[in-house]
Amino acid sequence: MSATTKVAVIGASGRMGGEVCRAVEAADDLELVGRFDQGDDLGDLAGADVVVEFSVPDASPANVAHCVERGVDVVVGTTGWDDSRLESLRATLAEHPGVGVLIAPNFAIGAILMMRFAQEAARFYESVEVIELHHPAKVDAPSGTAARTAVLIGAARAEAGLGDVPDATTQDPDGARGARVDGVPVHSVRLRGLVAHQEVLFGGVGEMLTLRHDSFDRSSFMPGVLAGVRAIADHPGLTVGLEHVLGLDD
Image (cartoon, rainbow, N blue to C red):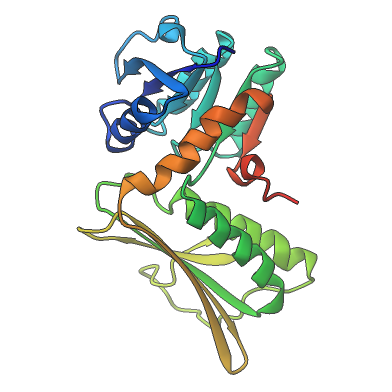
């Protein structure tokens, strides 16, 4: 890869995509070479070394596959990557060794630390619930960050030998208790004026621990996005979670 990394953005006219374009243009070691949106012919991806993909869940797998098949590394911020989609992507990557794809539920450094702290705390508390709050234009619920947090908490609880989260609820016809992700209750709020926020509540006898992260502006995600762009060439194959790029996976 050349000293200046050539970057293309898929979803460039979106809220996150536009912010990524501005961040890339402001970076001395990066060059924005392509902007793509829904319906555009991706072609040779404008000769990019790395593509940043912020589109919509239904379009993202095909976009990422297009990049991989052309030998271009990808940093993905689009949500909706369930186990079946990840397995399909792994199969595609197996045919293109050396190509790297980073899928990150969240690019804010504080959010990554929150998830790490939640994973550490999970084994000490009987009760836990996750509340995520976003703007009303967000199309998916729960957020990718909340789902990832719940998965990490669930795994930590299982390793610690904890049972189900205590809950005597037997009547909830309207779903007031929220969703369950790996046994962890997750609640989604959609409210005008919000950007991206999450609380993890841990409860024990006589105490509660609250972990909270707030992104008040989408610029908060850009250091993580650029870190992914700069590091992806050194991470061939599939990487899920920015923590692996930041060295927080020990």
